[in-house]
Image (cartoon, rainbow, N blue to C red; front, side, top):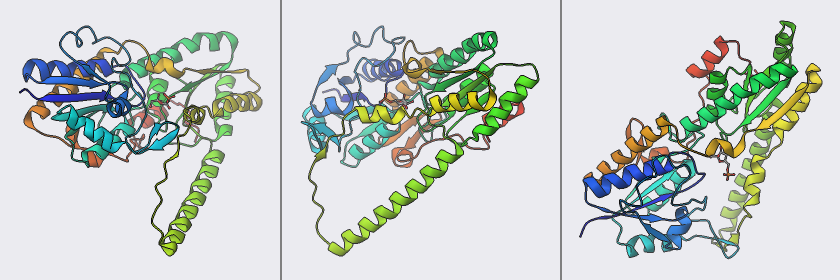
Length: 382
Ligand code: F6P
């Protein structure tokens, strides 16, 4: 009986997911004579055993298709919202792996998915992952698919804002995605020629940003483009966050201490499931709205804000993402054939999953992109 390989996409969707599914699937079917079973909507679909056979017909015509044909969710095996409660459904997922007689499970996702896959690997499942995210923040891989397409979309937005900023002598603030990493804003800011680039890795001083804009204005360039990552914070905000996390760490240590004193066994009562809106609210900090207002007050120039949002995750994958996703996909099939599991297929070859989880790849402060931005007189807010 030929081998059966499960596959799922999890976390935020991005262009290139279908190209990767096609790469994995076509190689497994065509080259290794294996069968492929898709799970719908990430780990939730694996918990509910909602499957889709991926035969050559299902894999045809999806190379240039955005999104994911399997659907996705951000649900975690050990904290799955079920009937309004957060429940650990790991055992059910492991049962469904066995029920479908899987020989391995391929997970396509970002940092959170790598962690979920590692959790299942520790339950004895043969797991292998591929790095996808527009944030490019998955550790131990030079690049994740989805990033190149988002970079192109964000750069085009910076390009387009130049003409209206110039016509109206305005400051145009463009908020870009990226979660807690600055790769997208930095890359698109440099490629689009933004005058100011603000990223989470460098907390910014709004006064320094304003004086850079005023300097431009005094040199006859009465407009400025500010590319700001959604996770960028001001120095003040960074200070508050540092205090807060210190405070919660102390509280946590105290609770741990009290717990040890009590020595009472942990009650694992299922917690209330967090309503999905909370997560969205997390991202809508409004900090870019505030930034635009502050810059207007500090410079006397009109400021306008554009939040590019989910346009960065939509549409046809770029040639670069199709190429990377296909190459990683077929490499994944080769590893499955060799029986190599517990790894992530990174851009420069497989890496142990245990070394990837719990890490976020942020922009190093001595990175060439940062140096290059400084060399072309881009203000980074510091
Ligand atoms: O990780 C991809 C990403 O688009 C981030 O850039 C963004 O912060 C987040 O997902 C948005 O999450 P959601 O899709 O749940 O709104």
